[in-house]
Length: 138
Image 1 (tube, helix red, strand yellow):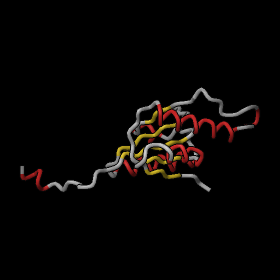
Image 2 (cartoon, rainbow, N blue to C red; image 1 turned 60 degrees about the vertical axis):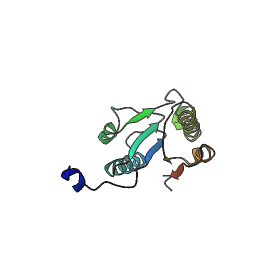
Image 3 (spheres, helix red, strand yellow; image 1 turned 135 degrees about the vertical axis):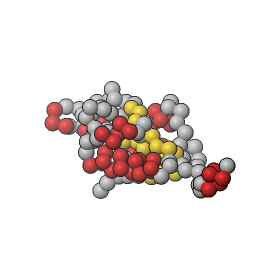
Image 4 (cartoon, one colour; image 1 turned 90 degrees about the vertical axis):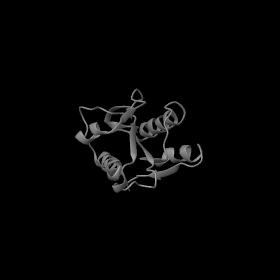
């Protein structure tokens, strides 16, 4: 009893944070997402990562410590040889991912961090009370 009273309880509940990322591989943007997710988790936040492509054999090792969900891996990553249409396909994959998480995944979250700005309006128009952040790198 005295031990429980000695512990300090955080009076402010920690938010649940949802990260949306198009392809969780081994690049710089992926490193940024993982570092932010791990830092928030270390501070007591509930963290989930949703991505359109995830290969546990080709990713940063830290991603295996986090709950990573995948939707839309069947969508193409490009429209032909040489990476043509990769940006358009990435946008389509992110819109699909955002819609999937909003309407089919039954996820509860307080904050969503979008890697591409294209899905931000979807979350701003969804249920009120969500905080929407962008991790778009310039």
